[in-house]
Each structure stands twice: as structure tokens, then as C-alpha cells.
Amino acid sequence: MNLSKSKYCEGITCLKKLWLSINKPDLKEDVNEKVFDTGTEVGELAKKLYGDHTDIEFNTDLSKMIDDTNKAIDAKGDTTITEASFNYNNNFCSVDILRRKNNIYEINEVKSSTHINDIYLDDISYQYYILSNLGYEINRCNIIILNSSYVRKGELELNKLFLINDVTKEVLAKQEEIKEKILYLNNNISDKEPDVKLGTYCQDPYTCPFFNYCTSDLVQPNIFSLSGMTFNKKCDYYHRGIISFEDLSKENLNTKYQEQIEYELEDLKDKINIPSIKKFLSTLKYPLYFLDFETYQEAIPSYDNISPYMQIPFQYSLHVKKSINSPLEHYEFLALPGIDPRHSLAESLVKDIPKDVCTIAYNMSFERTVLKKLAELYPDLREHLLNIRDNMKDLMIPFKNRDYYNKLMQGSYSIKYVLPALFPNDPKLDYHNLELIHKGDEAANAYSTLHLKSNEEQKIIRKCLLTYCELDTYAMVKIFEKLLDVI
Image (cartoon, rainbow, N blue to C red; front, side, top):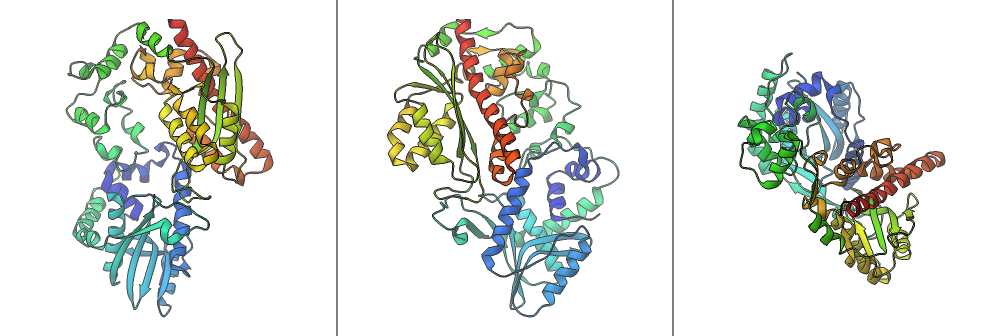
């Protein structure tokens, strides 16, 4: 078997995950390519922390990378080598940044995260195991992550953007464990798919891309279909053999779990709490402004006053109903690509939404946070933006409180579940019928790379972005009208 550091980390997380990655990679759920692109981008930038360096070019022929590494190591004097590649007893690794000073080595592992996960320690400990067994003297191991507190002001300051964490003690303490786990993986990977039960490792430290495959033989619906329960708690029930909704119906669960189970097992009519819905609707005063933002994140801030992974608003849709009988109006904003979108968005927003009107969002905490951040950034717009924020109402409340519920909501109050549950046969309200962009992460990825596209591609993507965001607020209007209908 030829282990790499990624395969090693897969294997110690779950032996079945490693086996499937090797033997049935096509079963993987679609992964967000943006995550890999971000990791590459952060890794490339981190290489500049130490100035001049020799980069070992990737090659599918790993022996070529190892030969190139040996040549770089043979050079006299202190050196920094990136993607330095090694093999010990058929166990392979590439070190993100390997530094040598006075023939003493330092291993640096770069992660695009803002905190250190335990799996990162396994990753770098595996690298230390290989290099130390090859005879290299290593005096320090670092995990380099992004500093979430860093705020860009002018040129990027790499020494502030990155945090270098010395984990040498932890790495040394893991060496015997690494040796045992490598032996275990080599001895237990065979032609036969391992029989491994589901566990917390299916979601921690990462959501396993084979989860749907591993749960495909379970009765539907099952414990993992239960909305709102922690995954750890679901695993507890699963290991006790309480898996089906029939099994769960005999347990002493809280009211919302019981309700989801009852609606699934029995043919119950829609639950509609008329007095509570009336009370909620009485808090909404015309004119009504239905608002939805789209945001994206950057690991490496492109503009001033941005931190790693800060939510950056680039688009909004706004549907307006001035009175119960007035025609529906629509306004929208989508920033140009390749610029900081926030100021132009904020200026457009205060033009489209007057002060002291009722603005409606779905899960308004997100929109309120965006407005607060914009207000902090632009003092000239602060009063108006906070006024919009302070007059906001949350359309999610009747569904979060289960004042309106049916089986199709599957225990969730997310708009992506509520909308098709209320309008199951309306193609105009079906996100699956949209072109190119069907959900928020696709919108974020599309905008964040828009400046890299041709003019013709940009036109197509912009149209799809506008259509997607418009549906978000149109969906809110239809949900609001549904609430009016039922009372």
C-alpha cells in the first residue's frame, strides 16, 4: 500500500473512507471545488513568508518529485524547499514548507483554516515520522493558519495574516501512535470493503463525501433524517439500534422531534395555528420590503477592512408591496466584478429602502448582521442602514415556532424546505428549475470568480445570479401571501 498524508488522515478517521477513496472514488458526493482552490491559494501565499525558495513541481510520478527534492537538499547552505517530497517504507509525503538551517530542519504545514483541528496534528506528525526515519534532524514543527483577527489596511502583511504555531511537543508525543496506525492501515486494507459502522467521524472533522452511500441501505426515513438533533446524539441512537422513525416514536423525545415523526408516520393534515399566525402578521405594516442578501467569503482579503472569511455582500434582491392591493415591485443590485462591492451596494440599498418602513427577511439575523457591518464601515450611511436593520421582521418565525407545519417540511424551517412544502407543484418556485445557480454557495462561488470570466460568460452568470436572488425574495412574498390566505 502507498500511503500519502491525505490517505493516512482518511484512514485514521475511518478505514472505510480510505478504502472507498481508493477503490470506489466515483461514489463521492460532489465536493466544493472552491475549498480546494482556497487551500491552494493560501498555500502559495504562505510560501512567501520565508522569501526565496525552491519549489518542487507536482508530478504524478512521485519518484520524480522525490528526486527533485534530493537535488534541492544536496545544495549547500541554508535553504527553503516547498512541496519537498519523501518516501519511507512506501509511505509518501510532501512538506508544504521545509526549512533548513545549519543542517537542522523545520517542517511547516499550511492550512487555510483559522483554527487548528486535531487532524492537522495527525497530518504533520505523519510527516515528521517519515522525515525523522529517513535520518533528518528536525527541531521544530509548525502549523500555519490564517489569523481571523487580521484586518487588511493597504498592502497585505503576511506576518500578520498568518499565525505560525509551534506544535513540536504534540508531534513528538504522537510518534509511537503514528507508527502503530501506519501498521494498522497497511494490515487492514484489503480487497474487501471494510464493515465500519457510522459514527461521529462521518461529520467530524469533515463531512464525509461517502455519507449518502454509507446510509443508502438504512430504512427511510431514519434517525439521520431527524431535523435539529445533533449528529452525536443521532449516532447514540443509531448504535443502540434505534434507527427507524417507528423505533424513535417509542422514545421520549421533545415535542418537535415527535411532531416530525408523527407527521411522517401518519397522514396528518397541515398544522396551522391561526391565532399565532394572526399575531405575527399584525406586526407587519405596509409598505413591506422583502430583502435578501447574497455574500461571499475570501480566505485572503482582497480589499481594505476585510478579515479572512468575512461575509462580503455583493448582491441583493428587493420585492416591494406598498399595500395589500398594490402591484408587486422589484429592485435589485449586483456589484461589478473585481471591486470591493460593499459601498456601492450600501448606497443602492438606502436609495431603494426608505427609513421607518417594515423590511422582511427570512432568518433575519443574517441580514441584520450584514447591515450592522455596513453601518460600521460607512459612517455617512450608518443612520439609514441601522434604521433598516431596526425595522426588520423575520418571516421565518411562524415556521420556526411550528405555527405552520406539514410533512413535506421534514422537520425543518429553512426556506428551501418550507417553500416546496407550501407550493409543491409550482415550477416557478422550484430552485431546481433555475439555470447554473440553485443555492447560496453556488452564487458565492460564481461571483467570487466572475472577474476571471470572459465578457460573454459574465453576462450569462450575472443573469443567473439575478434570477436566483430574485427568486429568494419572490419566495418570501409567496410565503407571506400563503400566511394571509390561511387566516
